[in-house]
Length: 130
Image 1 (tube, one colour):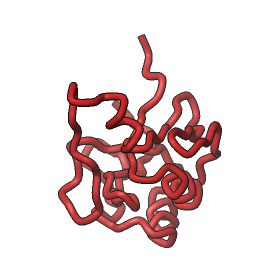
Image 2: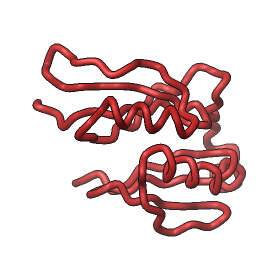
Image 3: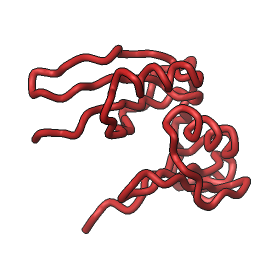
């Protein structure tokens, strides 16, 4: 089995697509008002409209929406970058909120973290060595 794609439930799909294109340089794939995809290399990042997901899930499963003024969910999206400092600066210039400035981790990987426009944690990292 392999990871196919990750879906973030968002209040509005188009602003999320626009933000990720600007902040992280991703290319859009399919974009509709209720669902969109962005190419990230071997996997896909997708966005689903919260309103649509709530209709589909009904009372079977509620979820806590991501919001910039609330604690982030216990998940992080990580993008591999050759230059983590430049990726961090670019994301912040595009409106991401800085969380952790670029730092070299004990295992030899550079890592930085921001929050996207909906409050999701996003890291820029060098290729893992583990």
